[in-house]
Length: 340
Image (tube, rainbow, N blue to C red; front, side):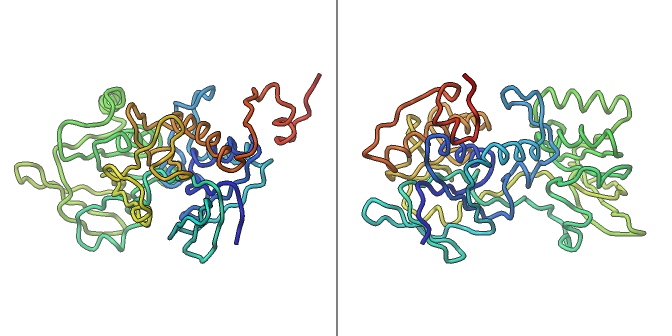
């Protein structure tokens, strides 16, 4: 059995920042994630996509953000348990017992659920025999944009992911943006950029079209598209990127006795505790009045949840708030030599 102050479920940016906030107040955490590495959606879905809402960082990618957060928590020597799912939790004498899919057992005072939106799967293209092309010529997220350099790429979707990648890849590839409606639900600013790129012949927009048939010839994908009047057109491409959104699955979390609201976990916004004492939810998976699904908001939630965890982990100690710039104890935990 592994004893710790806090078990964190999820190693996305918010989960990683929770490690930091727990560490600077002297709490030990163990991190469990069903993916094979840290970073969550930032790594799995958009490692190369620019992120603009991290304070003091004008722009960074999902991969860069993850690397910086991992560097930030190095002093705490946190253990990560990848390729594992939390299957079961139970309460014994005011402690939580956490069991994983690899038969590991943790005993802790607190659990922080930072699992994004739970397990996620892409909505797939409704085409026959698509499986043999997935991961080779058809992708639902971009792990390396240079793969598409100087290639023909068809992008399906009308949301922010489709628009953002159409803009990004138009710099290095021949892009064809295809959507089943003439209207796009992505941001107006991104759509304006798309229209400007179209005027400059940097990309092509085809609406309203949906995929009807897929074939392969001479190592090229041959797509048959159908519009809303049953007219058919054929498109030749090297790769297909599909951004029809994600199907969210809570998995075992749904069986833990937590209150649920549209596959999200309601929390008290004072400390982000759920209806179960000692279990907290932060990041995209939690909901409360005024909730904003931003990484920035998740960082705030992690900071307050960490302080609440202190009270459960060390009930006989009084938490004393100190500014990180002034606390010698925090400097020592971070391995920083404080100057006089």
